[in-house]
Structures are given as structure tokens and as C-alpha cells.
Amino acid sequence: MKFEIAATDGAVRAGTLQLRETTVETPVFMPVGTQATVKAISQEDLEEIGYRLILGNTYHLYLRPGRETMRLAGGIHKFMSWPHAVLTDSGGYQAFSLSDNVKLLDTGVVFRSHLDGSEHIFSPEHTIAIERDIGSDIIMPIDDCAPYPADHKRLKESLARTHRWLAECKEHWLRDPRHQNLFGIVQGGVNTLLRADSAKACADLDLPGYAVGGLSVGEPLEYYAPSLAAAIEHLPKEKPRYVMGVGTIPELLNGVALGVDMFDCVLPTRNARNGQVFTSSGKINLRNLKHAQSESPIDSECQCRVCKKYSLGYIRHLHKQKEILGLMLSTYHNLFFMHQFMRQMREAIAAGEFERYRAHWLAIFEAP
Image 1 (cartoon, rainbow, N blue to C red):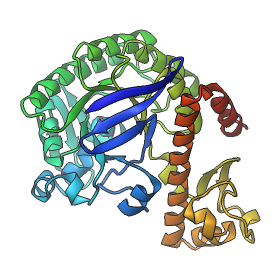
Image 2 (image 1 turned 60 degrees about the vertical axis):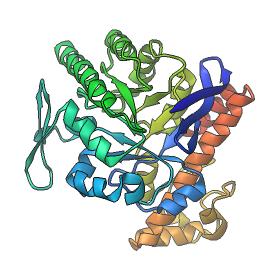
Image 3 (image 1 turned 90 degrees about the vertical axis):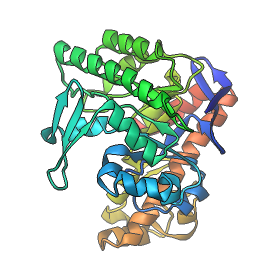
């Protein structure tokens, strides 16, 4: 992996992330493909839009189709016919989101499968072994994502586990790194002192890149920027920085303002399937009756093939009738919008116009 910063505007930066044959321009938004598929859109369409880095999830891929299937297929790229880069989350977030089926031990996370109730332990060694079979380009360590709210004792326990497991993950990764790049994960909840301590501990391990986890887990929005800033301050400037699971327009803008390079979130695809699309003038609910006879596109300023061909009224009809095509068209549009939004942001950074760009979009997407 090679990371180069091409332009800066204060703390803001734009650059490139080279992962084998794939060049990813940053700041980048990464679509989430939990089960080796981004829901309601094909790999060809993702490639056509311009995406070069997507996500998979270690926990879910471990359960289905299973690590042996992934290994025999030659890894996730061949399995899903995706010629570009893949990042896999480790399962640490699932330990948080599926907490009723999870037990935390000093040696790892014990999952009780949400599919059949079978028990599985994700130790640092096992997590790296699974991700090795998956064959992703960027791999994440198993970590302890404390819920919000969490008291000081719980947050300290989270950091102790996260840092210990990260050191062990690094040890197992270095035994056979292949083409894979291990990122550290900063935790600490909304406690800025613990966020700083965690960032320092991760940076001391000198890894290819760093992520900030445990945000957007139910905490009030006003905690986002201070918690993130406390972590970013202590992460190496020459390494890529990634905020996990964050994807609203204000969160992206405010994250980039602090020096973040990478984001992922299910929001654009999940919202699209639920009938909400993003436009140059804000969010639209496709199911509103007022759109029933509209002959306009979703967004007259959008150049995606959906907006060039289909009317808002037709796409609303598809959603109301629960037709699969409606999910596909709105997903394509939302992911096109996100890709263009990030491309234009990179151009604004290069031109020294990021703050103007940020103010423009915050006025649209933070409006009541």
C-alpha cells in the first residue's frame, strides 16, 4: 500500500491510496458490501460509477459462505468478480450490534451465531486467519466497541482489550502479510482524553493506516467532532485515516475538515431501499404522494443514467408496488450522488475552496 497526499487546505487533504493495481482517490466514501455484495446494485454498476474500494464483513462472510469457500474461490475478489480493492471489517462492530449474542473474554469475542445459535470465538489470531482466507486488501483487527453511554470503567476495559488485541493481530498479520494492510482502531467513546490515549497507543504500533471506531453508535451529534478531533490529533499525518460507519453529508464534511481520508456507511444504500434519495437540494422521500405524477428526474442537476432516463413519478410507483427495480434505481442514484459529492470535494480541496464547498452543502443538509 502507498498513500500520497497531493493537496492540502489547512488540516484538509486530498490524495491517493494505492492498493496493488487499484488507485483510490481520497477523501473516499466506500459502499458497504457486507455479504460480498452491495445491496441492490451489481459490481459492474459500482465500477461504472467509479468506485474502486468497497467493504465486506469478516463476521458475516465467516458464517456464510464460510472461510473455506472463500479460500477455495481464491479470495473475495475472485469470488464476487470484483477486480478492485476490498476492505474487511473484523466483527468488532457486530460484537456491539449483536450484543445479546456476544460474550467478551480477554482472549477474544465469543459470538453465538444469529443464524443457528452455534458458538464461535474471534480471537486476534482467528480474526487474522479468516481475513487472510478472505483475501481483502485492508484488514481490521478485532476490537471492543463500547456502547453509548458507557461509564469510565467500561471505556477503560474497552481500550485495554482493543490495544492488546491490536498488538496480537499485528503479530499474527506480520507472520504472513501477503498483500494485506492492517489498520489499527481507535476507541474511547466520547471521552476525549481516552480517545487521545487510544490514538497514541495505536500510532505506537506503526501500522499502515488507522481507523476511528465507536462513533455513530447512538451518541448525540455534538460529540462527533470533539471525539474525532481528539483521536486525529495523535494519528500520523503520513498515514491514511478512516472513520468507520459514518456517512451523513455533515459527518463527511466535518470529518474531512479534521483530516479524515476514508469513510464507509450503509446509509446511502439503506436509505435508497427505503425510498429516500439524496439530491443537490437535499433529501427526497420517493413515496410522498406529491411525486406521483412528476415527470421530472430525481435531481435535474444529476448526470446519472437513472436521472437521464426515469421520472420521479415512475420510481415512486416502483417503490409503492415494492418492485425490485425501484430499489435498484434509487440505489444506483444514491451511490452516484455520493461518488460525485466526494469527487467535487476533492476538486474543492485542490482549489483551496473546501470551506466554501463545506458551507454550501451544510446549508442544504443541516437545514431543518
